[in-house]
Image 1 (tube, rainbow, N blue to C red):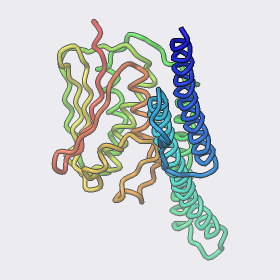
Image 2: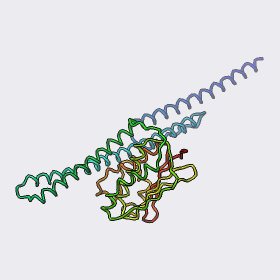
Image 3: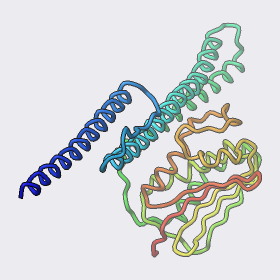
Image 4: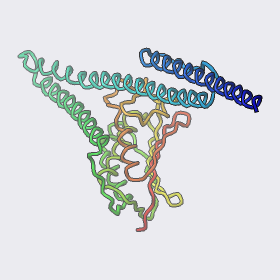
Length: 305
């Protein structure tokens, strides 16, 4: 009995010793994690939590912490990149708006000069009007995109004859193509096609895609309306010398303009608005470059007539 008693005491002391040792390791590990977390809170670093001693489930906790940190860092990098792009965009937009205003101001100053002939005066007035229209169009696009992003625009879900909208909208640009001394190829199916959407938004989509072709295109314009399976497909293609393969994946980004086309009077919002409008009406939009032919396609679910 005496031996069993002391044997039990010794076993109990061993268990207490083991538990005490583990408790000390847990405390050391927690202090180590607290120290590293405090350092991470003070400093901007890519440091990852490390293990002071391998014990219990603390390894899993450290791995989880590191996964959270990695996700947080990626989000921060993304936000910094987006903020940088936003600042660049604001600078670019400010320059784009300032340029025609400065030009208009210069012509207005010449208009008040007595040395200007009537013929030149009339020409200056036309130029000033063009510059003011350029600024107005830019501001309208900015306002329109801001409303879309803020969710302030309501989209109707009407039964639309997109064939009629397509033809009517293209016809509005007859003079623009006449100025370019070219005639676009128009391909439309014989049977009227219908979609569900907002009339004004559909017209804006077609207008923006034609304007984009006019601004960046140098010929071989082709505008098509077709049906593929249960989808209505709008296709706009043109020859270009200002769009490269690297531009295609960013072509629908807000404020994006290609390196070669920065002198164009554009906000870089036309295709961004197209993307937003198409998606709001449950459609899809994509772009591709086939050698020197740039193509934009917008697709919508087809409705019965």
